[in-house]
Length: 284
Image (cartoon, rainbow, N blue to C red; front, side, top):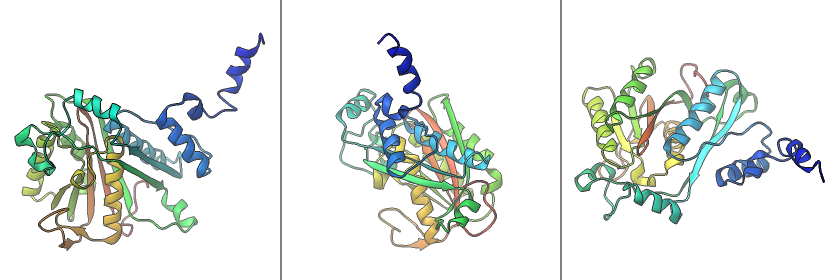
């Protein structure tokens, strides 16, 4: 038994999956998906806040664009009924305490988010690899940009300006809709919506929807869920003029969809989704 510690050090990194050994729920989820779907490549787990979902999408996209991977399964999940999470968010004073109101109308009562139980997973795949196996593509993820720094002045506007500035070349022409991942928490929500409405007034974008009005706010899963919704919209080549209420039954075509992800306290992401037909994609 004297060599047991040395033997354990040899076995744990190789014979057992690290995801199972660490015994953390997110790692167990990744390990279980790998086993069920026979995923033989490596896995990475991002946890804790909205930036986890943004970083997961960004990491997968950059790996495919760089030629390091051909296909990635990426996404996240949130159980909104976990009382420990609700307690943490309440201590952080970020929950919405009143009868449901659309995200755009919560600022007058201090703001706040409504958690939503969401699971969203996407297959990001290099185009030639997908065509070789005759996979059906819903849309093309053209570009992803992420900002992992803390906000200055507690606003999401400056990071979004920087991120969209990097994407100027892929958002300059045609009609565009924005699927906003804003949560409802002040002051970031007000800053983002004001910024997007200004872009719309200047003709840079055509429509803005806060998809959290339908799903609730899914934290780690929110950005992947927004990209999934945008991909489905582009696949059908039609988007609703309003997610809920007035204009919900009126449909229009857009050339691209921009998805934003804005964390409660930090972490912003922007993704651009286009239809499958058209110019060659940068990555997935």
